[in-house]
Amino acid sequence: MTKQQEQLIALGAIFTAALQVDKLARTGLVDEPVVKCLINSLLVIDPQSTLDVYGGNDSELVDGYHFLCRFLERNSGISREALRYGLSLILLERKLSSNSAMLNTISTRLEQIRSKVEHFGIMHDNVTAACGALYEETISTFNHRIQVMGDVSYLQQPNAAAQIRTLLLAGIRSAMLWHQLGGRRWQLLFKRKKLLADLLQRLQY
Image (tube, rainbow, N blue to C red; front, side, top):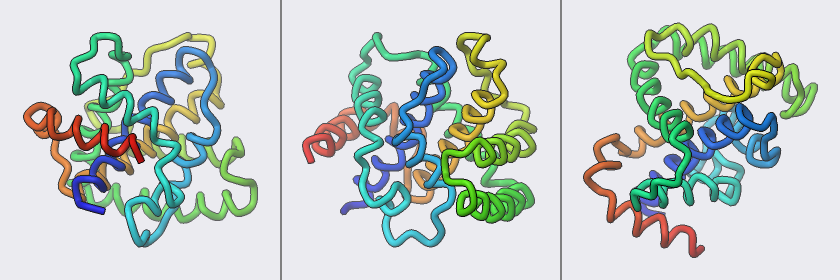
């Protein structure tokens, strides 16, 4: 797999997380297999490949790929909120990467969350509550914060709020991976045609 293909996987994961945030905020629903994949990506240590971060394949990231295709095609029908969330995750990851103390805190807390997953299971409320609290106590302290828009009756539910923060944390983890693989924001503007061609090829696998 080329470095560009690996970048696409991580980029697709960022926008998959953004789409799930948007769906949860508007409908109170998520795609459970997708959310499992994203939460698990937070807990993978020393992956042998980019795909290993997402369970060995990218089947749960297809919605993110399709969304990116529509964005790169300048399709006006895409969710502007999901796009805003995805781009904000990329921005927040850059702020996080320059804060070594916060990175250490997140690493330590994720190790504790792994123990919760082993005890309760990856989709248990205790796990999402812990991930959500971690996001709130770290990423949410930056001046730039993601304002999630949706149905207030869902956004005010503690479990839904925790799930949203968990998904945002997973999106930032994928943004960090994307940057480590050479992904840059300017590529979304100036390499649209190449990214689109690579995405379409990826979707044919």
